[in-house]
Image 1 (cartoon, rainbow over the protein chains, first blue to last red):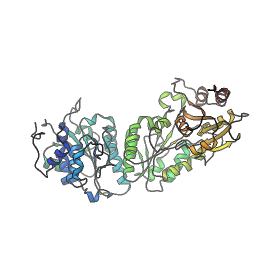
Image 2 (cartoon, rainbow over the protein chains, first blue to last red; image 1 turned 90 degrees about the vertical axis):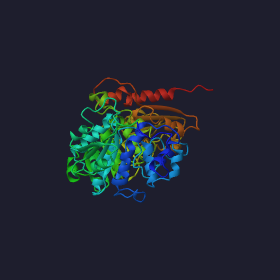
Image 3 (spheres, helix red, strand yellow; image 1 turned 45 degrees about the horizontal axis):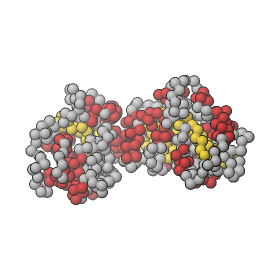
Image 4 (cartoon, chains in turn blue, yellow; image 1 turned 60 degrees about the vertical axis):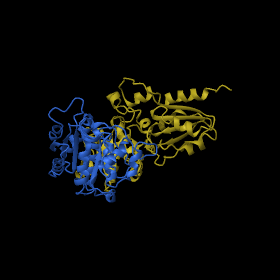
Length: 233
Length: 297
């Protein structure tokens, strides 16, 4: 059980307070909280993206493939200045640009519209290939998936191809909250490493460990970070 | 048409935005191009979902993808990727299929795709090209790749005897005079349609671009009777014709490939005959349609 509940308002100005504005009294499912730490590490310490460089072709790309993990994502985009904080108050409303799944045409800073599981990694592979074809060696492509999302076969098309071709600018992050109905015996990371990826499996709440894992790629192969979160409500 | 496509697409690689995405089909034909442009001729293996997803990602970076495979695998298997990884992301690609409705009839149902154009037609603002001759392919492909929006090119081994390169808008090939019944033939069914109406007072117009359908040309040419002959699922363009002529009393006969899984092999010509799309079958349908007199109200 975590301490974050609907009855404990977060301190004003914090990410928790922004999340409360999205939540507006509703009860969030656990996956909202399990994703928050990895999103914070990415946006605070890893991704080279700012509202000013949101259209720069040399920016890093962050693709949220598990599109339902949207509350923390919107809160972070607001905290970082990609969207006005006021947008959070009406999430899902008839005039809102913030749906229960993100739409890249409606939300600044959002790289892909997602929701149907199993689309982000293929789009990420294509993005990495496009950047490579343009000779852009700097930007890195990060795709955040869930362990249950890995059930979708489309991911395994992307994992196999990215590994076989050594698509070194790609990082997948698997938020593993043990929600896959049939599990991943041997660990989610093995599905990647058997295809030639480098992998790190870390505590999904340990910011230092996540940072080290997210920056620990060798620039020769695609990299996966499995962020394990099992202590949630 | 496939050889013409490979040649034209390879030439379009001169533009650094052009990127060809394959799923093994035609990979050997593109091998020389892949050796020259390894970063822009990509064969993902037999992975059609990834093929279209990769095209979406490429387009997000500003590349112009040409995505190519067998029609059922490109359009039907990867339909959600077409809908979400291209349309929903607000990016475009050029999809080029081979196989058509029953080019490889002996391969059976798994390789038949009569519903491909109808499926693409569930999406918005796609241009659909159905060339009736290989000489129509280069211009259509070049125009599609030079654009920004999504386009679907449906290549076939079925062909008319001659090419009509400028037939996006309806092109009248046989004029039976004002008010005569209008037959619109799409792509490779033209020759059979022309033969079918020999001696009948029927105007015949041709197009290789069923989307966007030339509704202005249709309104200018149509009298009361309109006959559609399409090389894919019968009725695919009926809604477009119906909407274009909604303010006019008219009768429409929409011919094309039937919905039944025939569970028969044979040749493409056999299937053309079984679906009533050969000259004799079309003539029977057209004569029956024109003989029917609407009951006066």
